[in-house]
Image (tube, rainbow over all chains, first blue to last red; front, side, top):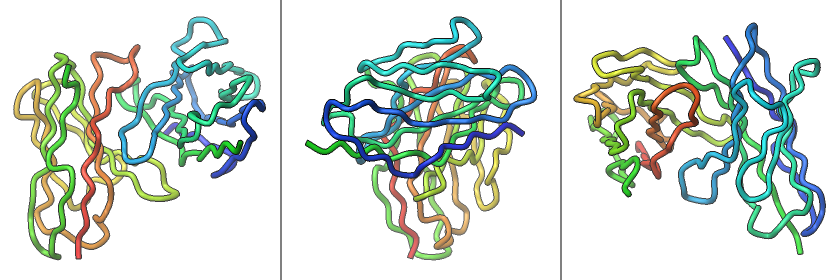
Length: 113
Length: 112
């Protein structure tokens, strides 16, 4: 079965600083990879996805992620954090013939003024 | 523009009681999913329905049953609730593998 590991349950940055949220996956076949964001008391919202096209993927709200097969990574970045980016972020990998997604345990991003 | 609608939003049950969580989507999506979210554990798949008429177990199916009533609706039933089932439950849907999931806003369930 596929799995994802998100390093760091909490990441703290200052407003305007670089955001880097880490995701490593294990997959025996080329996967589809996703990043989702969850604001308090809400459902998850798709940020971006990799589905075997361009390895650098741009998403909403200025986020992007790069698929690196050699490192089995799909890290999420944003050049300049905004207070409104404070939320929980989940990485997910496709599993079982792309029929379902397996989620990581999440990283809570804290943004200070 | 409803998307995925879950009812109820909040529920408190006593141990041993039963209930059904409802989920409906109006996007004509083929696949639907039930996840539970617990602190520090991310989202874990309970059951899914890849297409109308099919259902399959996910990672944590024990204590739950599902029904894909039609293409729009996918319900989750707890036959005899236990405190370990205290969680936030999310329903999601997708048209196919190239798309991400659309999530509902969740049901917060407490079993006392």
